[in-house]
Image 1 (spheres, rainbow, N blue to C red):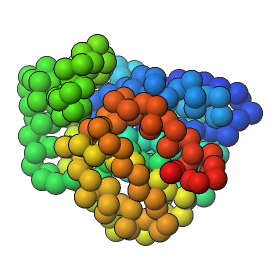
Image 2 (tube, rainbow, N blue to C red):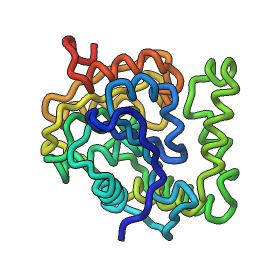
Image 3 (spheres, one colour):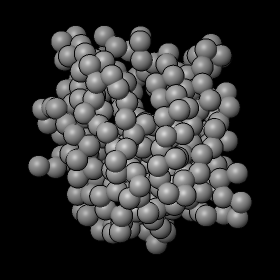
Image 4 (cartoon, rainbow, N blue to C red):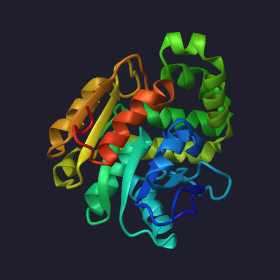
Length: 260
């Protein structure tokens, strides 16, 4: 059974659709730095993942099938048949699932700071158990510093605090269920079937999904392009918004020169 997803829509109704999906533990507002530029070119649909808003928090565990099915149901309800996808971390995982399972619907694909397989599973299961027992504050001090480089943490406390507030606002059950989806995930066997032109964007200092994960995706998705963003960790689109916006728009608009 699909879950209702919190979402918002921006831009012209006549423009091609771009769906933006955040990381586990963040919300659509994660994409604020890109929104204005993207909405000039696209009808932008920003989503929250299953269980990440009080609107609908089914009991976990969840699966990538659940998360992808939620998205397709939402887009059906909005009358969206074909779309491009840009997702970070869990958003990238869902994007790869969609491109493999509904290739006729995905125009162009951009996956940022993500992985097709992210063991050890037990670490994700332990995190799920911890937030169910003690709430989101039990993991915030460990999770948030890994989203950014030490320099960004020191120089941009306001941006860091906004991301921390997003994490703390996510229902524990929804976060736990998505952690369990990541624990069970192995998209690698599906990647060769992806037909959409694909950009893989990586943060050079990303700890949760290090560069070899991006390289694996790039090697398995036919024709995929890898771009590494320097001085950026896991939430690269927050830490380096101008560079990431440029790279993503070049790919999504199929501009001459591609993602370079």
